[in-house]
Image 1 (cartoon, rainbow, N blue to C red):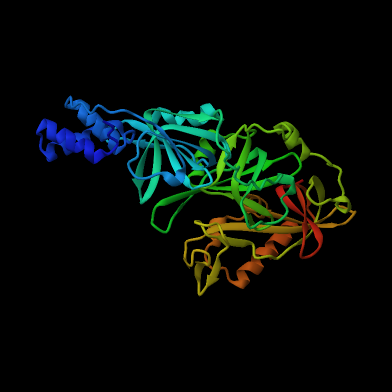
Image 2 (cartoon, rainbow, N blue to C red):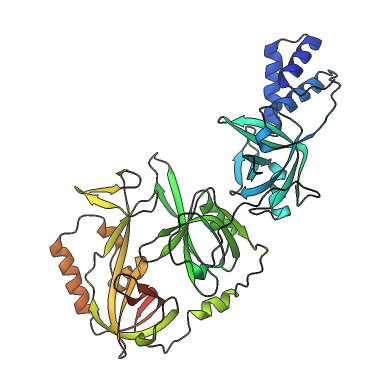
Length: 443
């Protein structure tokens, strides 16, 4: 007899043992707690039957299904699919105090999508198989469970995951929108994939979300040797990037969204993105020292010779302090710009009053004898050169105070010689080349 229904197995155990339903349910709970999510309802009831020596005479016939054919409480399921995206591994503490881990993989086969859970040691299959977006896999011997009204797959204790299985059915690849870092020039409607080498990782920034919980965001930069791209990682990627990735790693980013930053395009990672370290690729990414050396080229470059997208080190005299807004505000939850309305900070995207992040912004004109160049710089560079503290700029600033700040800056900086490094960027509004600075140093 073949039993694949949890209720049917439970009734058989109850009939043959004469135990009360309350006693059997209590034993079921203990069994499920012991295996911490590794057992389906069918599997737990099979273990219950074994506990009381009830012979179920089960014959197992694993079936190859499509995702659209999955139904609740199926067991012994196998299917072919392609990897859609892979979020970071999660760690948790079990009821017995033991540490566990869960790796989820989102799959697609053309008939639907589902999530595959890899618990405990099964989580290591991801790195062992070197899976990434569009990898073709065979899920063998999994069970189906329901969570938040969605059907999920989990590998059984004896189940496995096979990459590039033999004689698979035809499953179309998920369309990829790949862009070289150096070819990213405008925001696109759809997410993109790209590859680059990490050249900088910045500290995690922690803030309070609308639910009162702490939230995190982390920024890092990648380069393909020709151009760099600033990336903004939101949870759950912040700790993953901070703990497991380093300056110099080659990474592949999939399904990241491009957005306009203050002065350039940025890539945003969220839970549907994937980050693959050292991906298999035919693309040649220069080593880190070579990429960093590129920023030191043209040390004798002249303002009149600057070209859009290239990195420069220049020297010149400060001839003007641009009296800009000196500060800008961003929402700590979505990182969009914030408007000040009636002395309240309003995020139009989140549609609410928020406690904003304060960032400083500076701009100077320098002259090297061949021309005049506008340089722009942000955050800690502003604090260093202007000798300002961003914490003093969250409060309202009167026009007289702003004038006083710039008067002091002109007294201090006009006529001073300065060394700057950064990337030349064509300002589409003014049609002039500007320099987005990494560093500004008085000499």
